[in-house]
Amino acid sequence: MKLRTTLAAAALVTGSLGAQAQYNSLWIPDTLSGTTFNLYMKDTFVQFLTGNQTITAGINGAFWGPTLIFQKGDTVHMNVHNNLNDSTTLHWHGMHLPAVMDGGPHQIIPPGTEWQPYWKVTNTASTFWYHPHLNMETEAQIASGLGGFIIVRDSEESALTLPRTYGVDDIPLVLTSRSFDASNAFTTFSPYGDYMLTNGTMNAKTSLPKQYVRFRILNAELERGYNLGFSDNRTFYIIGTDGGLVDAPVAVTRVKILPGERTEFAVSFAGDAEGDSLDLMAYNSGLEFGFPGSEPSTSGAFGSLLNNTNFKVLHIYVSAATSGAVSSLPTTLTTNTYLTAADATVSRTLKVTDGVPGEGIGFRFDSTDFIMDTINKYVQLNTVEKWSVTNSNVFGHSFHIHDIQFKIISRSSGTIPSYEDGWKDTYYLHVNETVSFVTRFNDYADPLHPFMYHCHMAPHEDGGLMGQFVVDSATTGVAKTTESAPDLTLYPNPAKGTVFVSTSMQAYYITITNAVGHTMLMLPRPNLMKGIDVRNFAPGTYYLTFTDDKTKQSYTRQFVKYADL
Ligand code: C2O
Ligand code: CU
Image (cartoon, rainbow, N blue to C red; front, side, top):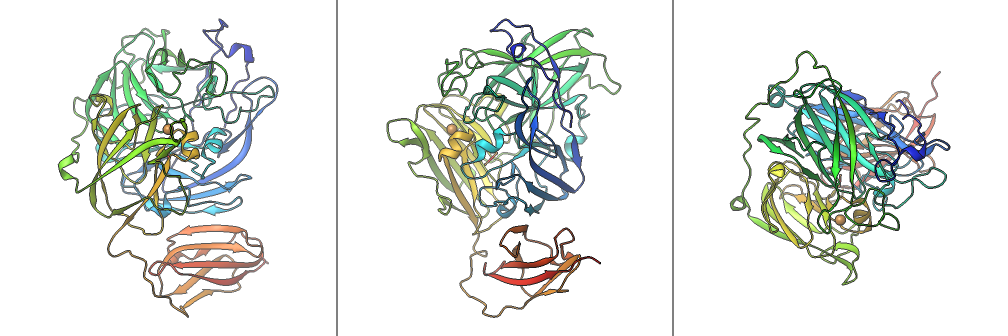
């Protein structure tokens, strides 16, 4: 991965401080595709400013990770290596998958451990992302640079005449901002950064061809929202929301996007002259009370040089059209069939409340603390539910729920903006607003592993604005029977390259620890036929803990890894 160009700190602040902008070329994350993905999370550093490097963390890189390209229908296998000095998790935001593969706060990966979730991609073509989700440490780990895009492709989207050449006319943009202290370290626990980082690039510029260009925007901020538009107020066309294409392109000049949300739009540069330039801007000045980043302060706990200002997200130079340029957009993209309120057989309400009543300190759902081993909601598999989330406190929030995509059916503040009239997993919950959505909880029941719902502003999530639900079915209940002497043997033992598990039980989970209790490998629902690859293990004694799918009882067996001759 390329390091960002060094530049003088004084040149970083454009506009308000009058300094001349020095642009740096926009970094585009590498892509990984296929069905096996090797991800290495590690502590590292980036030269953001002159002087000291900034300590960061990255996935296969130095700040932010590769873009994973999935094909709908494929089963994808993830080999997640935690080479950080801390425990972590890796969550696949927006993906519909079994809870045990979800990478939420319960699927902790200790340092030095490999986690191997896998699932069948059933989401339709859209833009998703992955990021750590460790309880109370999500802000710190996302702030350090851990995360990446997921692009799902499918045959329906591929058949449309849309820009689709990654990095050429299909541009992923991850929006975030950071502040630095005197020694160039990221300022910890500052929700609003002073400097815009677009794909991790400060003062980003890029050349884009004279034709329709697609942007896949992700707000990966800790807290700030963006009110995006172009510097000449040109019209652009929303083609997709969090979870898929909209029925038809939606013409807009502004789109608001809060932490965790994605939006895909197409914009035409065909009418621009080669060499012209314009800016993708955040029009964040003068926004409504409660919009994150509308605070007037430039310093202090919620201060930032970018607060309540209009600032550049990307400086664009128009270049020659490419061959195969898209010159017009399809008028129909897809035909979505949405659930309606009438389909729902269960209705739930959730209220965002103050953690300390009346004082606006900390936020809660229904005045209830988030506790890792308390399940807040039980959902029956295949049920269509209507959730109504009310915000009765002093600040806006970004509501997100795992496992499913939903359709917003009402906003008490007024109408549903046309740019969010599609499949969503995250939305802006304004002050004094109730938002209702409808969804179906299908496919994956698991009484043991919950899914999360929370505010996607990391400080709020870490502070306790989070809850959890399990999806259960009549047939997945945990049986109370205990097998006293289950058939469970490991062979060959001692083993060299592969350990096989012989049992009549089905595996729910396998964990392998070494002789001093350090977790080496975590395998949700492993395929026992393939055996377990222990080639990279040092010679020695190991313990394999097997959790039975039916009873959820765990059994431990010892095996020895031979030295290779
Ligand atoms: Cu993007 Cu619960 O997460
Ligand atoms: Cu919040």
